[in-house]
Image (cartoon, rainbow, N blue to C red; front, side):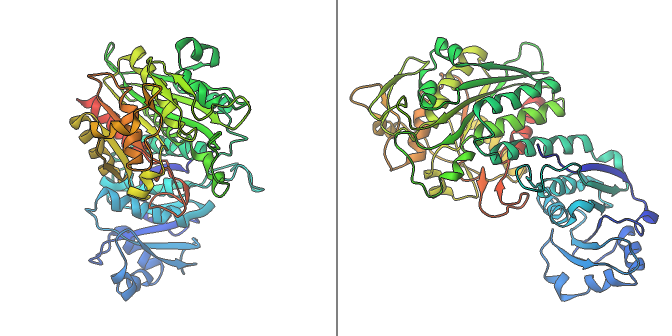
Length: 488
């Protein structure tokens, strides 16, 4: 598993700058005013920082970006970054600046010279997240050590390094899970990695196929019956909030590989379907982060782990399956399997835990990518206040999310002649009808949010805080939401 850089927060020591072999980053506002650290670096480099600040290149630089000086005279470092960042900047721009540093630091690590302790944590988080690199299956192999990011500030006590690291750990856990190939991350291996969270105090329970059948989770089992990899549901409980308070339930789709089943997908791009467990990956990352931060809240994470494969025993289009709730589903397309997994796990979550609110996450539909691209997750909800709370958290954390409509008029697309419903409603409003399907498994009075993360879980180009590939979208927003709910 990939670990973030080791974060150290120290007092600003001007005398240590000259000898540092790490990538050194000095922060300067657009007004060109140099603080103590910038003045010291400018003196060491015989005025190089001042020349950078007065250049046209720096004037045109966007906030959070940097000009790089290689092998600066008077310093031991090979890389000096002059980062444009206002003292009273926003969290987003502070993280962007950190990401600029993280992308440049390499194995040498970084020394970030910041006099602004208020945004120091955001700068550090950006650096840690952007430096992610998954090497487990390359000739390079897993990293044997991690670089160190040293954040030098005037008030180290203002920066919670442990919390920053915990958030990065959660994001990295999610990214690793989403990136792993399906021959490595089987349902059994996925469950084992989640069981390891017991070392952090998370209560973990793995339900096997026999237990799932006894519970009536037949729609979930139908998805995996063509695979040699056994279907499982993993329940993770974190009970550090007030005793007796109902938990927040997070439910994740964990299809470790999706061929489409009998309704098999085209070959082109099928290799990307290792990420179809992205929803479960986010739930796992959130549970790890809140445990590392020892959040005083009650949260339960439930993930349905299956593999959707074509086989002589696989579910066929036209089959009718009974859900745990008791509703029957006509299978029109076996590639609409995520909702079949989620509906049983969602019902189980409500039956067992009676949660204060429930959020499901899934790489559910290609339709959401057509509608929102790769900038926003689709957000569907039956509760305005609950939804606004999440959208606020996502906005603060810079994780794009856009609310989509629900409505009874869409239900007619799910009408079946032989069962209570069909599992797909056709091409029109495909992401909405998928949400409408899931809403049938939400009990009256349960605040619910469905997050379709198909467009944001994994991307083909770098994002602000991540290299291309798995993003870990949602871990930061949901951690903030958990904190906000715990503070109510």
